Amino acid sequence: MQMNEAMEQRRKPTVLEQAGGTKGLVYSALPVVAFVVANSLGGLRTAVVVAGLVAVAITVNRLLRRESVQPALGGLVGVVIAAGFTWYTGSAKDYFLLGIWASLAGAVVFVLSVLVKWPLAGVIWNGATGKGTAWRADRSSRRYFNVATLTLAAIFGARFVVQKYLYDNDEVGSLGAAKIVMGYPLLAVGLLVVAWAAKASDKRLRAAGLLPARKN
Image 1: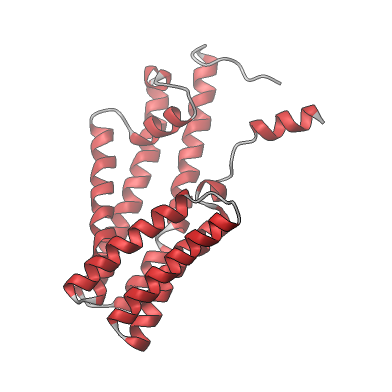
Image 2 (image 1 turned 90 degrees about the vertical axis):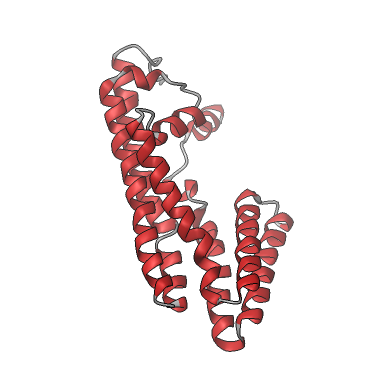
């Protein structure tokens, strides 16, 4: 029993779990779907109200089920800001504007982190797992995390290019679909590359004695 518990504690979360799990994927999509459908049926004000209510309902549901509310709260704040901005401008497509420019900012930050030789994929992963900055002492490890960071930059850049094109052409329905498809599913691809980089880096660092050997 103790061995099973220890194995469970050591088990790393899957890519899907890191992206919020199946529920996280559904929850992230619901406010967007609600906004697009409500906008087509009842107009902008109805869409703003419905999207906000859906986000609040998701947060309350997670609270009642004693699930982690951090993803839901983050989504709620995002929906509130987007809905408020949309209400202010009076344009349905502006619901997606904050996310569009945030994608561009993310792409730029990821690229800059590689240029200054502190690839964010490595910084975030090793910081979160308590491994510090030992990976930066190994050139191959830095190269692995450069690849992972540039993959994330490409994902954020693709989000910006596609969604900005749809925004400029007033394609509200297509914007909603693009936001969903290019959200967690694409992020999961990026996390796969980050996981590959981390595994390859750990192997290098253990061989060099910069990380303790793995316990059996």
